[in-house]
Image 1 (cartoon, rainbow, N blue to C red):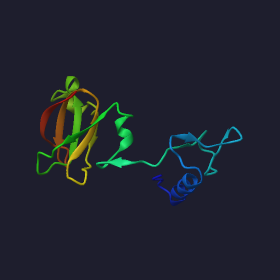
Image 2: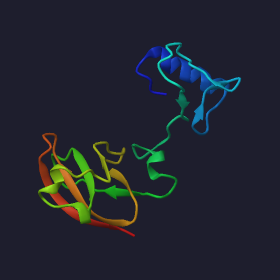
Image 3: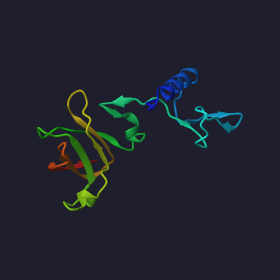
Image 4: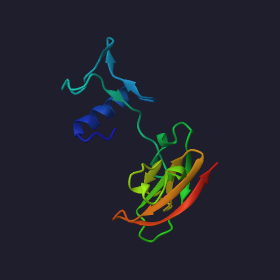
Length: 142
């Protein structure tokens, strides 16, 4: 859908127009993988349905309801990035290496950040554009 080449984007749009994609599919012809670009660089091509967005984030991020959309109100003037770390994994020293459960720098039209999180306890980390931690807060999703 968002191919880096104009040809890829055009091919996707044409394919989706002829055979609308509602779930991920593998391009096949007579039980063999189709190479739509003719480069023979891959064994198969997976085509995904067009991405739907909700509050500035792709809907697929909810993992079919396993994760809940969670509003994070901006708390700092220079806020740029919001990250949610599992509380049990978070320490001031581990935050340099830990992988967030979710993070975003995109806000919805209402100016609120939305994260997709499953029920658990989290440490929310607020960062500026220089990746400096502005502050933290605790959050529990039930």
